[in-house]
Amino acid sequence: MNIIRGYVFRLYPNLEQQELIEKSFGCSRFIYNYFLNKYPNFINAYKCCNELKDLLNEYEWLKEVDSCLLRNSIFNLDNAFKRYNETIGNKPKFKSKNKSRKSYKTNNIISSYKGKTYNSIKIDLNKNIIILPKLKEIKIRGYRNLSEIKGNIKSATIYKEANKYYVSITVEDIIEVPKFIPTKIVGIDLGIKDLIVTSDGIVKENKKVIEKYEKKIKGLNRWLSRSKLGSKNKNKVKIKLGRTYQKLKNARKYLIHLISKEIVSENDIIVTEKLKIKEMVKGQLSKKIYDASWAELIRELEYKSKWRNKKFYQIDTYYPSSQICSRCGYQNKKVKDLRIRKWECPNCLNLNERDLSASINIMFEGLKLYMKNGLELQVK
Image (tube, rainbow, N blue to C red; front, side, top):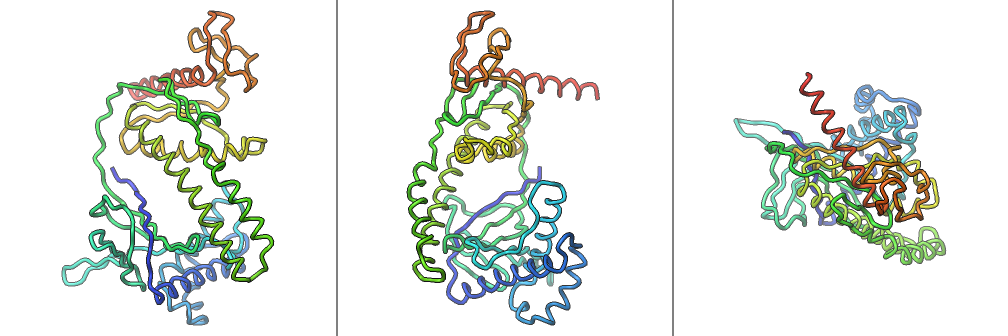
């Protein structure tokens, strides 16, 4: 099975390499803004790539950077328009020079000469170096337990965040998919107080990572608003704020990774709710929903299940999992109120704990989907 993996390393460029990276950021931004200004509603990426030849003659400083990043900038704009037309994303906007996060993407060009194969992007974890187009060797740090990266490197995205440089490597790899043997199924109820409650009765508490950094973020934002535009002090505050947001993001990411890894490794059929998060964040609980990172948890459960040949299902958005008795299946519409955490079934007198009961109902609904798919495959 072919899969795409991502690896992120911290970059330690020297002064000369830093200067070239900053030029690359600027050139990538220039190309994006140039074609967005020329074609404000729609672009043909291949036509723009042909126009790029004349642009290189007009602006010779574009030749100083890697040519792949210029074309990638055009295709990024093309993808932004496609996402907008499919109502997935917003209309493309001009990129700002003062944006806190800057990036550019380059491709791994594979060539051969006299029977030898050459790659424009190479990585050596024993020496802790990466070779990138135009930049040559750069020191890196990360993944201390890895001795090598398996698979073919497809591309690299170099970015700067909180005044630190990073490189994200995209690798195509082939993995052996184990045989699917269904022995255990789990239903997962997603929440705010408790991040997840499983049908096995396992509860993963929501650590509410944002509360740890919220006070500091508010203080830094006040400090930033009082600082003079263009001053050294303002730049220092921007860097501090960026690093605080980075810590917040990494803490969330680490927590979600541990939970998803544990669930997928211990279960064969995984069932969750299909939530309309974009609609949910319009309410009063928007900050808490963003902090819970449900979308990221579902994304990780889905791709990790696929890699391990496990089954992942999402039940219908409007399935009333918390209103149904997990013993007899009676639906009690009186318990729609989220403040009701426990309720007694009027039909069988079973005491239902809201989240646990919901996760059991989600599990059974997922089992129905699994059985239905199995019957459809048999018919085919």
